[in-house]
Length: 142
Image (cartoon, rainbow, N blue to C red; front, side, top):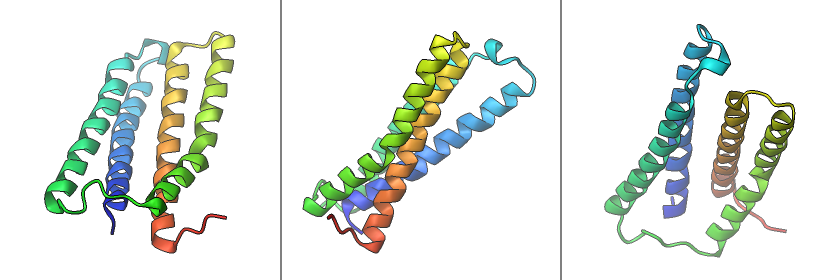
């Protein structure tokens, strides 16, 4: 397994864990509080920031475990990264359009922010899965 593939696994696991944690908290809040009254910003920022820090720490652990592999990537790694990024673009676009429509309809910020966050998480998950499948099953750019 290459350094980049290990990093992709770290990113996938961390992204899922942060999202599930935020989602569990959010559902708990929605059960007893109207959405407009939920103070979602701080927990969302903690989920995003925590995922970023955990991803960095995970990459550092990979570097410590295999220092000779650290930072090495080749053309195949770059093509797989590009393919993963292009595959997930749909989620960011749809979330952006949905948030724009919500803003035009003057919906509460809660819905707009969560739509954008869910779109980014969806994109991160698709990118990671597409990259891992490409590493595992082969990548044939044509």
